[in-house]
Image (tube, rainbow, N blue to C red; front, side, top):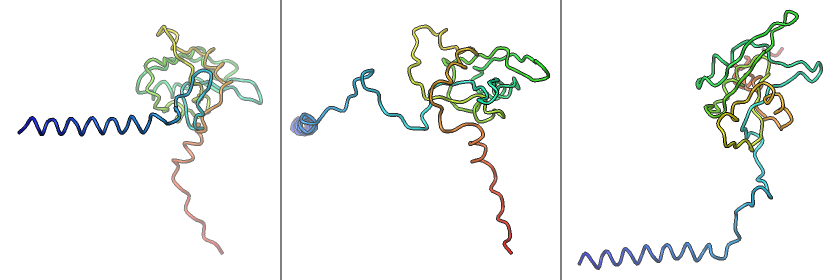
Length: 168
C-alpha cells in the first residue's frame, strides 16, 4: 500500500514540476546580458567608497580626525594624520574592501562629509591586495555617482525633532 502512496506523490511532484516548466517555456527571458546591458540601480545603492574634496577650494575634506577609523567595527580603515598650516589632513588613508561589512558607520559619523559611498559596482578583483583602497584610489572614486545618503543627511534624519513653536 505504501508503494502506491509513494507513486502517487511522485506523479504529483512530476506534474507540478512539469506545469512550472511548461508555464515558463514560452516566457520572454529576464536575463540581462552583462556587460552589454547594465541593470538600472536604485539611487540608494552603494558599493564602494570615495574621499571627497571641497568643490570651492579643491582641498580634501578629510581632516584626519580618526573618527571613521575608531568607529569601524571591522577595523578596515587605517590612516595617519598630517598637519599643514594648522589644518589636519589625512597623510595616508587605507580602506580594505575585502574585510568591509558595508555598515556605512564611517559615512554616518564623518563630521566633514569627507567619506561617502558611491554607486560603482565593477570592483571585482583577482588579487585581494587590489581591494585595499589607498587615498589616491579613494579620491579617484569621486567621478562615480554618490549614494543619495551622506553623513549630514543621516544625522538630520536621526536628530530629535524640534518642538513646535507656539503660534500667536
